Length: 318
Image 1 (tube, rainbow, N blue to C red):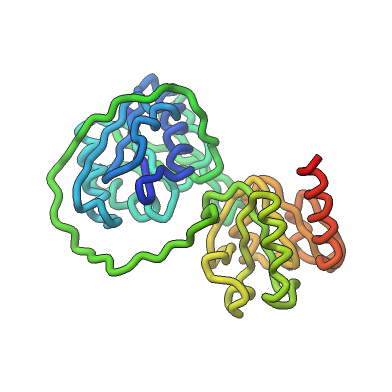
Image 2 (cartoon, helix red, strand yellow; image 1 turned 180 degrees about the vertical axis):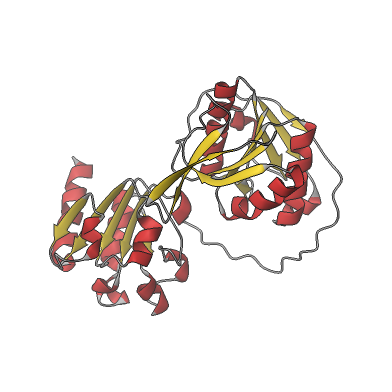
């Protein structure tokens, strides 16, 4: 059995969960094993996980799962993985997944690898690849324990509809009471979270001030993208800290990353250089970001961005 933890937020399955289910199904096909999905707590349309590759769906509903407690979640995931005789356990490489990976692996006495981005090579054992040194190198790792635990990097394996809805089976295991009390939860709403975004429009100090950010938001809205910023912009309060991308902020790997007025310091590049396509707009032809760019425009952003906006509006309206 290949078992995937189906993470959800307020009952809605996250994009990286659907990617993880598809990945788990493909791993199962390589190993001639069925794919199962585990839901902790209440979720909308649990049967729909079958559409993305799950042969079976299990759901463990308990009051302890109302708020995220990595200790309890890890215990439930590990115990149910043993119940279902899972050979490989797949987690999304999300904030929750990262906090669960080590705990689950310890309970299962399993080899674990975080942030895999390709299917394993099962021709001679079980080998997986992941990027290291901020994406500058790729390492191949061999997992030798009976149970393997992986977390899948977002936007690396796209979700695919490859099945039909399946019935949901209830499961359970013994759990202690949670030792965590959540007093308040504040989440950003109305936009795709940066780790899940396929398109990101980001800007830096070249914007000269927060009053000019309207053009960035307008461009992002036209593209259906999420907005982001460099660290100096967040530190000066021009933009909220949850938009800060880079080594010291949020690491992302969208299909399209547009960097406007960002020089491209190494700390920023480390968090975005796994983007599939990078477009840089900067008036300094020597800006380091151009070395990492797939496409670059040397020019004043206050001239380039409005012209880009106009071109996009004409393209989408045609």
